[in-house]
Image 1 (cartoon, rainbow, N blue to C red):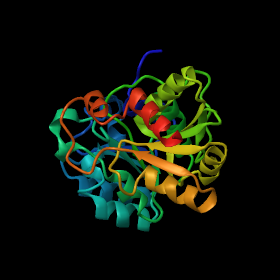
Image 2 (cartoon, one colour; image 1 turned 180 degrees about the horizontal axis):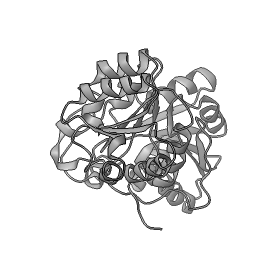
Image 3 (cartoon, rainbow, N blue to C red; image 1 turned 120 degrees about the vertical axis):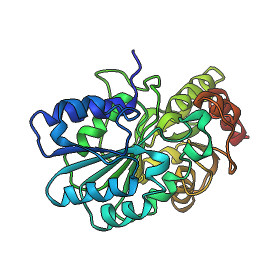
Image 4 (cartoon, rainbow, N blue to C red; image 1 turned 180 degrees about the vertical axis):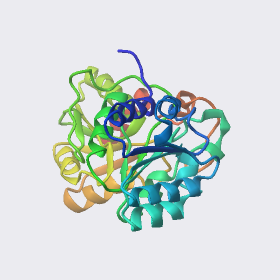
Amino acid sequence: MAKTANKQMICEVLMEAAKTDKSIVALCSDSRGSGSFTPFAETYPEQFVETGIAEQNLVSIAAGLAKCGKKAYAVSPACFLSTRSYEQCKIDAAYSNTNVKLIGISGGVSYGALGMSHHSAQDIAAMSAIPNMRVYIPSDHLQTRELTKALLQDEKPAYIRVGRNAVDPVYEEGNVPFEMDKATFVKRGEDAAIIACGEMVGPAKAAAELLEKEGIRATVLDMYCVKPLDESAVVEAATHAKAVVTVEEHAPFGGLGSMVAQVVGRECPKKVLTMSLPDTPVVTGTSQEVFDTYGLNAGGIAAKVKEALK
């Protein structure tokens, strides 16, 4: 199946919906190109706002439009959207409970060689800490399509983090299990549970396939809904496993691993090992080079599962 970037799929879904829904408005902070929103800006210029490099204004304007009845989609690099405009996300979007969808593009380390200034390795923790703010990190373009369609149906704020590049699909066209705020079981096994989000779901699935060749059966849980976390799915996966491994493109603090460990420790105590980026400025390079350096690939995840099962 051809690869499609998640950010491109968001634009495609919104463009289709905007044919009949004139309340949809997209806003960019000089990011229409990097966010794949140039087609939207050209097709619906009256439903597009360019703020320039002014992320704080981007969120505040989006919130104002939402208060006027618009469905506002604010598109900006995740590294800036989740830090430079954090107060506006907290107050104008979440505290004011406005219908603003914050689209954090080029999330994680997908800006590659631009380094720490352009990496967003803290956004899961930061955005999840805001009351009223939901956090979603879809694993491929097919799931992104379903998530974007679902978000069009509600009026609550949300942060959606997507990568810069196209990745191999986790699911198949015509077979994309999706339920809003419910994690997806990609594979099921009784030896270990691998819980991942975003671009780490693909390597987690590949790791399970490697382990299966060695007689180790692992569950793979796609936790695209980081907040609200699907606690029932975590408990189900952990209960039927000897150990749990979490995988995320994020710092080691306050992210998916921390959330899962809290639930497992409270509800069904098991060993939980977490895999993440290190607590240091990461090496520069392509996403894959960074992942390989820190073992965030199929082989590294499989090795961590075997370590957890010792």
